[in-house]
Image (cartoon, rainbow, N blue to C red; front, side, top):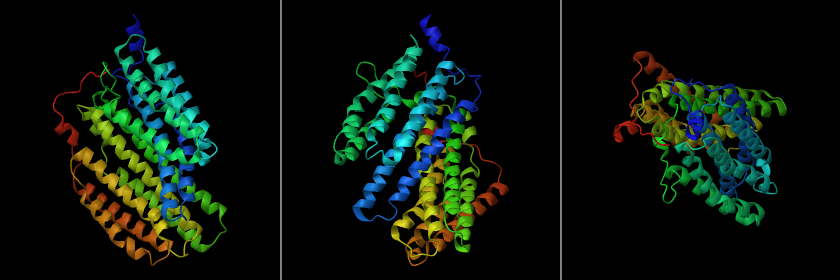
Length: 409
């Protein structure tokens, strides 16, 4: 009887793969959160040496903590029925915790470390216990118990880092987050119980694919918001207006390149192991979303000072963001089709080759060159898709893993 009540929370095969309105509402907290992450990256744009490395490390850590919260929530709504009141309550509670993290994020490595860490731990420790209780006697309850056990293991590192000296915060939180990600990769192994390999999970694959694509659009929306806010708050000039226009075009090109020939939903629908494809897509979209945030910082720098002297740290954002995007998009294409796009590879090499030369030119020139390279990539992507019929997906993980999907809890 208890197992039967718990089974009511599981997604049925006939369940819609579309994201619910509640999930879209949940994403609103991350629109705000990503703007805070982008601002932290922007704050270190004028630093050099170890100050730059430390600033980038702190910003990256906070981004990865937020990403873990969003990713876990997406897997929950892909495994459990999001229309159930219990799952809806879990999503709303997670949204509030994510909003607290976003509000505290600008000073999360300083005086607001405690509320940031507590909000993170409430999601990582308390949420899986709530889900386990809602599953009653169902075998899947062991999975959230594993999650809670591993999160409790790293909780002291988060709390000591928040309450202790500022100098220990970054190493302690980095160690805690590394363990959290490692536990996810290993399936949260527990003695006598074993691991819950994510690649074996039964999920609504098409739902997970849609959520990843929606998060990309959220990040892209954050970049549009950034250029609008910066341009609207700066003194008007023709140079800044031109930079604003090029920044917008660059974002539009990122959108075009991302979706050109992308069959992510179809790949998940055909996959024998949607959980395994999901883990690969998860890691790749981490890079894609991060690349868009970094590129948005470049937009801000160029709009603020379009024809000022170029700085190596600025190129890290103006050129480095699009480079990371092309790398991640190449990886995503390989995960779906098992091959590498020639046009995107050429674009990546072109950006790497011109980076040194761009040090002698203004930020506006650098962004314009980036936009031109991306425009060529988008053009050849479009030309190829018009000449060829859409290819069938052939994820390499499907070829490497024999057998059908298991019935992992």
